[in-house]
Image: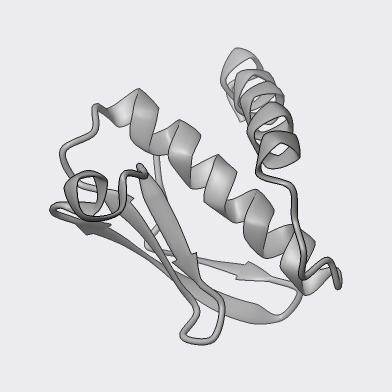
Length: 91
């Protein structure tokens, strides 16, 4: 289940499901740090939305920890493992 909002290091992020992200930006989700918004493509199946949410959440975590420059490959790898851990342990 994806929450409607999440707090990362004291910063509130609103989670929105939005139509057309994949078509417009060739990505499944995106994050706007300045506005505190995580957007997920609404056409995704539930498990893909959850996985994409974890991916964007990690971007927020790294950003709020001071890592403004992030390697997408690292976020992809860590988010895949974290998603599996969360799912396999019903967290």
